[in-house]
Image (cartoon, rainbow, N blue to C red; front, top):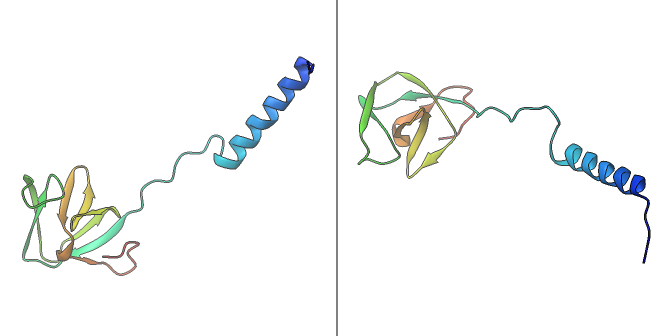
Length: 102
């Protein structure tokens, strides 16, 4: 049988743990916040829905020319506005310098 001193095992385990933390995670760092995008409303009236679909409940409306911040998520043609709010992507035009594509 092969004998390895306990202290050597502990040092090896600590080194492996340190390598793991530094290679896959930064110790003490928070994840990046979601990237926000800015859009102008192109429709006369744009319904804001509770989910990504035309059958979802209407929770708000936006008017033509309104500027709205959104998240990069687009599902079935609906842009995630955050906080459970979704709007049809086809009526949202990217504001100049916006971080998200249509």
